[in-house]
Image (spheres, one colour):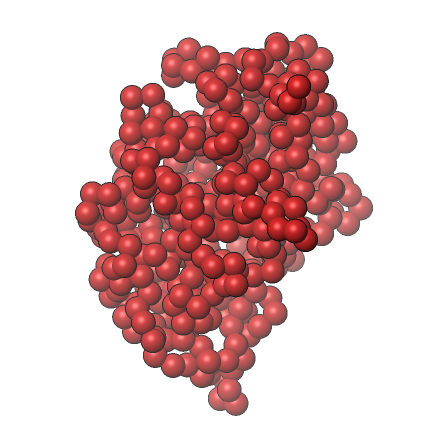
Length: 432
């Protein structure tokens, strides 16, 4: 049952900066389970109270076991936690509780790639086959259903898959969310997120599957970031996990972020939950994937982190590639990453109102018929297990929320993102 839930029902998802004294960040830390709260500048007091109440109420009725949220604006930080990391133990959910990031790994991978673009080790128009030769022979399905012999009819690549294509999910690669076509089932059956093998082996397996479309034709959510992780390995000469650790995590002080954790760290992480048909919360379980994370360095969904650590990463983004005296990428690189790179005609209907840069969804201006989905220019991404973040350049706001819920039709209130961003906006001071 839960193997089906883990890989098939995932379609439902598609659509401690503390203790800061040791990390150079001043914090106002609050637990929303209690009424006490320190006033935080740059935010509206009443809006913050409503935000804390919204999180506390959802935790109290077990819409989720627990939440950890961080809001940052103009160097001032507000932390809200509520509920528990584990229902059985009753231990609280905190800003430094480890969680599975799932697809919130993707922006980190995109930053790693762009670091190598800056250094000249990678070019955006490089064919991926320059780094992973198996992709030179990848073919493109001309039908999403097999022929009478059970084979997918294919044609050769009209053009190579490039780094740009992978960064924008326009390489034609598939993923694990298509339950409607035979090709989708082929990708699910050959999921990279189960079984043995390292990053290089997994990506070579992927190259043998036919593409959905010619590179550049459409935006298709995909394994692209997993492929990019392997590109980083080849271009840098370092294992992907070592590149992220030495070039991003250690410089930013993200000491609780990694692909691999110890038994002690795993035991202290937030439990992943699911709601059953009667609305009861219970630990998710899958014999096929006990930990609900890949056993290899997955650039598309494998990182384990904390709200505190991810707030440092997001603050670097808000700082145009810089956090304190640490520069990860140059401002012009970050500007390109957070600029829409895809014509809206190539995006699926569920992305209406959003563009896509290099690793981020971007709020587009509204139209006469449709108001914007947020503040235009805000950029973001989320994870399968109901984690979210966004950066709002025009307001200076950084927002993160972490919880751990496997998405099914039984999720109380649906995905957190359906209510969360508007609640965050409500914390901003209102014009006089």
